[in-house]
Amino acid sequence: MEKLNLDEFLNVGGAAFLKAKDVKGKSVKAVVIDVRSADLKMSGKTVILDIEVKKVKWSFPLNVTNLKKMIELHKADNTKWAGKEITLFKVLVNNPKEKKEVESLRIK
Image 1 (tube, helix red, strand yellow):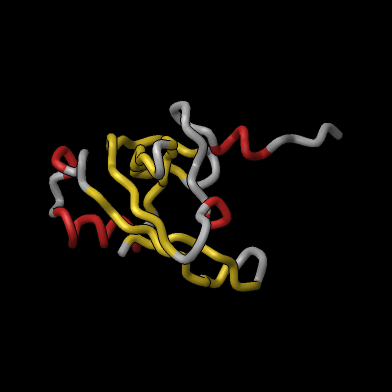
Image 2: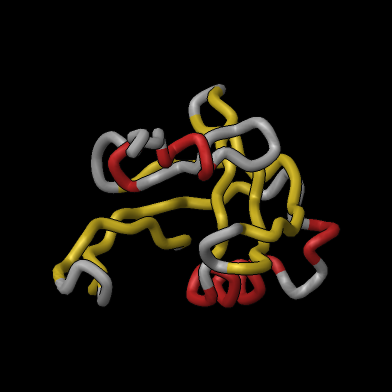
């Protein structure tokens, strides 16, 4: 069986997905460039922020927790999110598939 580079499947719209391991330190500031939806093969339809972190463009899919935080911070009109600055910070979350805690990113 061929070994797949699974990161290729996580690249939607030209920018790689930002993961906790990509963030140096405990948090990082990002600027929202665009907001879009995508149908991800593994998790279904998702809201994705296209963001810029230190002049590098990333895609950041929003889970329910992060989507609620964006709505709390910037209201429910996602057409006005472009240009907004957000802070992403690392947290430990329970991964039920792996049955262990893993680092994840949350919007502050």
